[in-house]
Amino acid sequence: MPRVGAELAVVVDDLRKVFEVPVRDPGLGAAAKSLVRRQHRSVVAVDDVGFAIEAGEIVGFLGPNGAGKTTTLKMLSGLLHPTSGQVEVLGHQPSRRERAYLRRITLVMGNRNQLQWDLPALDSFELTRAIYRLPEQLFVSQRDELIELLDIGALVDKPVRNLSLGERMKAEIANSLLHRPEVLFLDEPTLGLDVTMQRRIRTFLADYNGRHGASIMLTTHYMADVEALCERVIVIHHGTILFDGPLADLSKRFATHKTLVVTLDAPADLSSYGDVISVTGTRTTLRIERDDAARVTGRLLADHEVRDLTVEDPPIDDVIELAFASGPTTTSST
Image (cartoon, rainbow, N blue to C red; front, top):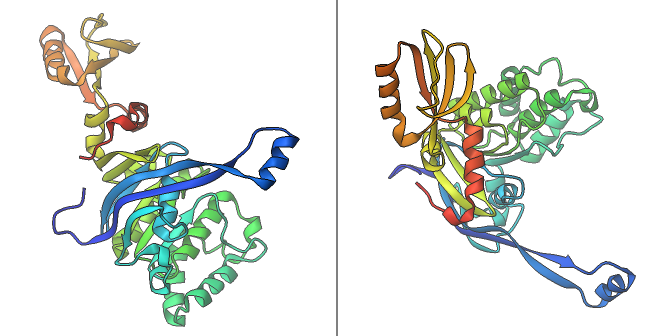
């Protein structure tokens, strides 16, 4: 949650989005009937969501497919109108699509191409300069800084269709940041990229945040992105927020166990201390209840010659799955 008295970049209160979806029975007769009298059903994509993001904060916005992440980002960027609720970003109401607002934000979607396919990225950069009416000196300075930070100097004069997915994504990000936005809405920016390219994108985003104090709201299915960039996460499921708080508290909220890895001087059966996950020589990995961690480690140290012992929270991927499995009935914030 934001700190008391902190400057807020994004404020969302009771945000709700309902889509009216046409439905009909299969068959030619039903198709003909739908031309005269079309029926609809309501689909709730986002349900009474509320949160706030500090200026300069990087927040992970997590959830399974269909949870409402992209719909929320589209409402925050002004592409969709909320059914109800209040949204304020940098003091603006996004749905008004004011030019002064659009100059201060950007939306990057990993599965959408904004660059001109048959032209070099540099030509698309020039189009962006014209759209935002950027002064030449500011544009050149920002363009060159982004090219250097993203290491795309050898790529920007090639047709976009000749670039790999990772190279194209870096050029897309550069194009989206030419006007130096203060708030970044990033929807799966590392989608489909290899591990090396994901790491480079993460490093760039952290550097951009540090240089310009930009607020970043990031959706991703790669937990390495979250662990590297986000101290705070918001977890959404079925359009409802399940968790909003520090990443470090996510395990405490949803994981009831810890992983204990112990290495002894000699092999031993440690099944009486917890659930044995794996055994490799004298090294045993146990699953133990979170509340029993101190007691179990004390017993092990007293009963055996221990060469090494570590107690860890479960991997963040496992914790996120536990959060999704908990369902919307556990909605709460910390």
